[in-house]
Image 1: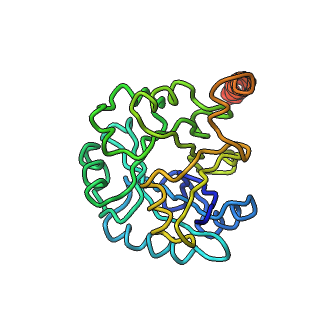
Image 2: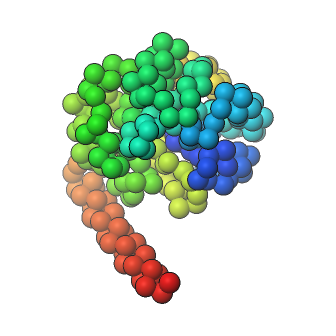
Length: 246
């Protein structure tokens, strides 16, 4: 068995709202001790041909101790429910029906995660029957949850009977943060062994190199939640001040 640390939900210049090239991402996360990048490009600008090209680009960007795993983030027609997908899953169109995404992913033995369920209250639209086709639920999305895990999302994952997942939702340097998914592989890191580990549930969400779950409760969790609340208030204040200057 081999243990690796992966960063999940990473966007590159292949997405319409991000700009980092794949090789720059690989180098940046290598310096931070990560050896697997679970990429997650927005499906809304992809085609089947672009997906094939992208898979090849991820393979080309891999090396020197870093594996770049291709993946797509599908969303519904009004951009509420988002599902990152990894595995040998055919391209399913730019904005497919979410139930179809999950069914096709399961049929292809792929991996599907419910992303940031509290963004725009996506969890309210989620059909609990979909849980059987899911691998995990994001309980901490750096872009939307900030410096602390989403306690409601963890409780929601437990209700669905699904394991927790942590993700950066990386679009730029502001999302660098010590979150990782520790994967237990059956061999050397390859796309197959990584996707097998995800599919089989051989993973643990980490924050600051320890279990992320410890920060969903207790004194440490309360302190981090307070820090995130203060950060969010400060960020809103700064944005408001900048808007007044415009």
